[in-house]
Amino acid sequence: MFLTKIDNLFSIVEEKKHVSILSLAKALDIPVSSVTKISRYLEQLGLVDIDYKNIQGPTIKYLSSPEPEFKNVDETELINKLKFFKSFQNVKAANKLIYDLYRYLRHRDDEETKATYLNVRKYYLANFMKNMDKKITDPITKMDSYNIDVEKMVVEVEIIKQELEAVPFYIVSLLRVSDVTQQVIEKIKEEVISKITFSIVFKSHEEENVVRLEYRKKILEVMKEVFPDLPDDRLHIFADYIILTSLGMGEVEFLLKDKHLEEIVINNAFEPIWVYHKKFGWLESNIIIDDEAEVVHYATLAGRNMDKMITTLTPLLDARLKTGDRVNATLAPITTKGNTITIRKFAESPWSITDFIISGTIDYYTAALVWTAIQYELSILIVGGTGSGKTSTLNVFTIFIPPNHRVVSIEDTREIRLPRTLHWVPMETRLPNPEGKGEVSMLDLIVNSLRMRPDRIIVGEIRRKREAEVLFEAMHTGHSVYATLHANTVHEAIIRLTTEPIGIAKTLLSAVDLIFVQNRNRRTNTRRTFQVAEVLEDGGYNLLFSYNFKDDKLVKIKEPIMFYKTLELFAGLSKSEVDREINDKVKILKYLTQNNITSNEEIALLISYYYINKEYLMKKLFGDKDN
Image 1: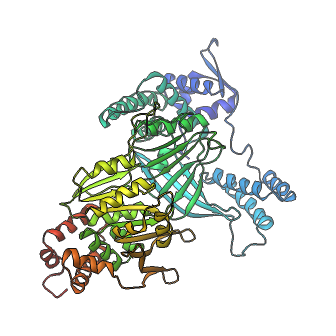
Image 2 (image 1 turned 90 degrees about the horizontal axis):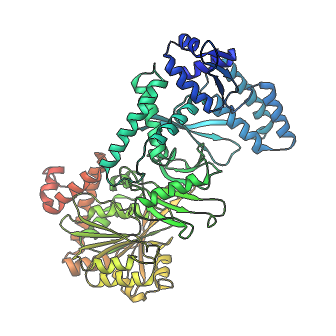
Image 3 (image 1 turned 45 degrees about the vertical axis):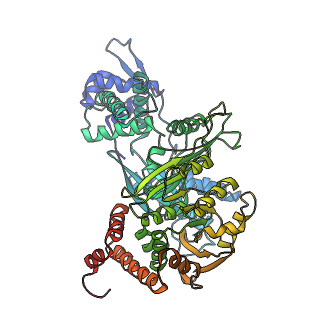
């Protein structure tokens, strides 16, 4: 824990109960103005009282201390509490006591408090975990820890597992200062905000930067007076904390900077924020929003970025942050426990085909098959359940589109990110205004895209019959289309497409050439390509590959029929020529993984060379030897 002059000042006042500002300034070796400023903040917090009428000058009177997590870290008292919980079989309360004690002591270095934790832990193990595995020697184990760089701050993250709790905990340590210093910093934030006016929605990055600079300047002016002895780097850390928690979504901003998180969920203002970690799944954080109004404020901020509103009349919101992170928000009483926000984080570095192969999501041959299908303009449907990676897969596959083709993407909330080498026009739907006017639907955009001379059309998700009909019509008129659909298997996808509410004729399905099914194994927290099938002329399907859970790999089921037939009909390629092309692509994909080339921009450049001069690229990568 980092201690400041505020802590030293408050310790003296707490000990002497009544002390003059002048003597405090001498004892702490800081200006009288700094002591006065700190004392006023402490008075506002109700911790001290300043007597200005004293003949010897203003004096400070001690009133109370901040309410600690533990009023008294007394070993006997804590064990007695555990005994009480044991008598009522209240395991939940015992768990919370151990968890709170762990958090309280984790940054305290004195041996006495450490010994207290060890003895309390010993009692807990003997009485609450006696029937568990004897190998377990600690009720709380650290699963992982790492730092997040946020501006100039280094935020510590610790993930812990408590044996009798179903869900691990995600603990964020921000400033790591005392309660007194933390509360004074919050008061400084309130004071500076009250003296500066600015729009919370910025029209440009330049406007935002100007406001940030002005805000930082005023914060540092106050900080230097309150913390006259602190080095500039520590002052800037405090300033960054105030700026981040003022201009954005408060402490949620720190979670947004954690690249290991996929989802951030606020269920209400009375429960901790939940996060979905790429490695550990769902975790309960130690961050709680102050009140329901703050949740509404955050949702409003997200909506304003896209000129969308969330009110009691329109209590549902789909939007995105400036970083591209997708936001869904709901207001009570639609969600009966309180207002909610669900943020699906946009990866700073989008998944690449190399990442997919290395992680086992897809194998070399299947990736080369997709590459060949996209090269020769076959239409592909990617299906899967919620969180299975449909959009990520779609994003990865589009890198195989030739750079001289025009791509139009259509989504409700933009999630697709294509490399700069592609000729790409992203489009997004728009909800109607409060008067019911100005709506731009998915159907409007699909119809309009056909007038934009696209070579490829990407659709975020097929949901309704009219959209599907226009999309399949586009396929039949020669456009190559890539889209996603919610379904768990190829068979389910066919049923969804041919029954209400989509309900298109089965004979139209032959316009889709390949169907890829993505699966998320919730037990192992892994995503895999689950099935690959081609659609037959009668609307049925031929299953080509299926995932084997035991061996963790795709197993070939049948040889393609329509795949080879279509390439022979429209590209004049024989089966042997197609197989040769797939083998060449497998070699290139192996080159990418062996050299750990994961940047989509680099991969896109290499693929564009493949389309420009394949022979030159193969020679450049593999030399003159027979590949």
